[in-house]
Image 1 (cartoon, rainbow, N blue to C red):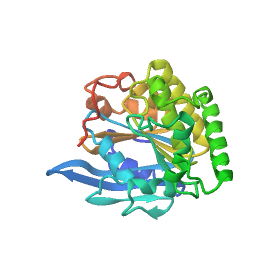
Image 2 (cartoon, one colour):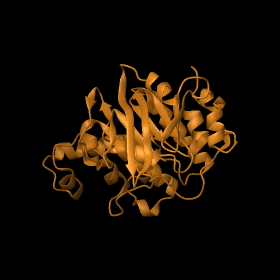
Image 3 (tube, rainbow, N blue to C red):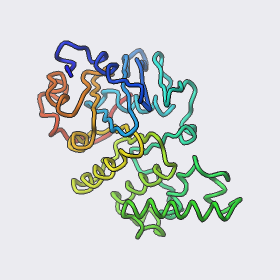
Image 4 (cartoon, helix red, strand yellow):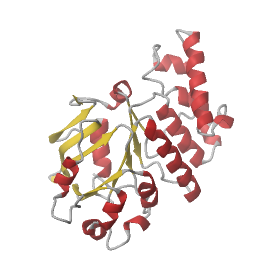
Length: 285
């Protein structure tokens, strides 16, 4: 497939990747803050069983794109479609009901709840009783309570976290807390998982474990990964979309993206596979 630097524009490249099986389809999104374009005609797609990464230098628009998909920011132009239904006025709290789960750049765990209780709190899509009453113990159904706890424990076991089930997040290393946050996102059994910089703060060994976990999710859902760590992205993603100054400058397989001259230029001549996260946040508007 030609890259953005080989005769096909990046926007056309991204649009060409759309397919009838897409779970998520983003088309020509544009967002302007204070007269500056944070996103400019961005298109991408994620199919079920596919891991798609979004990369780019600081200020490229990655966080803005993620916030638009999650309903935090409204675009000036463009459309978002999930499972062939347009998302026009969705809010972040609607994601679980839609079949979408997300993680935060931090961990966002409830300090006063144990690990297993934090994971149960991710069951918004499944629980019949109100999630708040479920967490504080006002269950409408003890059968539901037991079923949710069993499922949460099964997920923790799957992620080698079951030994921490009854501990509080503050007593755990940061890398373990990040895995608990991922377990909580999986509790809703999503069709699409949005991962916002899941490798931030992790060691190289922890990133390897994270990559293995994410790849194992491919059989159950689509994954959109926004990340700075290029080694994780290159080893985990099926396709990659590269943003720079709010525009798609390349899209394709990891190998295609690494060969694209515009990507090399965007990363100041460095080998994109060797670029690591800089200190600080993404820097997007």
